[in-house]
Length: 435
Image (tube, rainbow, N blue to C red; front, top):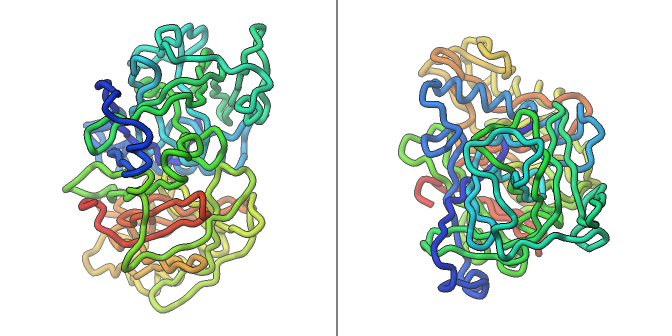
């Protein structure tokens, strides 16, 4: 199925009493939750028998698949643009009253929040129990013709006049079910759970394909009206931020996602670039003017995909940074001039510029020059080790005619703040293991 290495986030939620916290507290002070990488030991998807190189190979495979689906290639009559569940970061959230915990993919490249629901007449196997809407006192069906229903690309009605959705993926995986509202509860680093009432969700009754049995749905964090971010707008004032710990970190596996007042990125070293509206409004477009390799500045192509001004999508779930083929050739040449290593092939066949692992290999300084913001990439993620004797550049050419993506390896050790009210994105270099 598709998935880019979805920046799926692992929000660990509790079922504690909710009466001691409210939305006013959340809006005033902000709150944060922990994120766990898909391949970390805390993840339910973690395979202790896999080597670090195998984990990376799996990530690259998902990254490539997700990229194609992100821009609508190889899809089979999609009803909506949604990325499937093979992502990089996971989350647990709670739905309903009393809170029912689910493990889901949190995805900045999609909007709808959905989970498998009883009765599940055609569902993939999952380890955890299905959500039972009949057990939640706050669950409400959403009728056809309602505002929330009309946010879907192609909603349709059940015989009960309940709004229904269907998403299909390029590998023929799918989810179909009812649109409803219910309370969603998030945990926070303060230790107090934060409930959000009347959140629009998808209750999937027919879901199948290549979904993983350890996950039970998707949490959309995109820019569209059905995303968790959009629906929390009044509580978080359109602000969220994250700081991704590098995949190779040996000191800390968890990252942090912050909302509201806790998500303001400012002070010394902070820089800001416009968030550019595009089609669909799910995706976060930026204008990348050039990339510097050492002292050589390479102008970035202005061609676009879905946005009138932006030429690259930032996605915290895509592992690699993907750029147009011609530009990649220039980038690879500039990197090779500095690296000075012996060329090698990626054993997995995913990455184009690789070298024999050698302590004398020079790691170039790479800076992404966005409109108004110069962002120096963390050198620990310029090259990544793909096997015992091979390292590769964490950039790759994108398929011809399709737009570019700024992936999560390039975002490591950067505090990145989204302000959807001001339509800005801010960067600040930071050791994310200390955030």
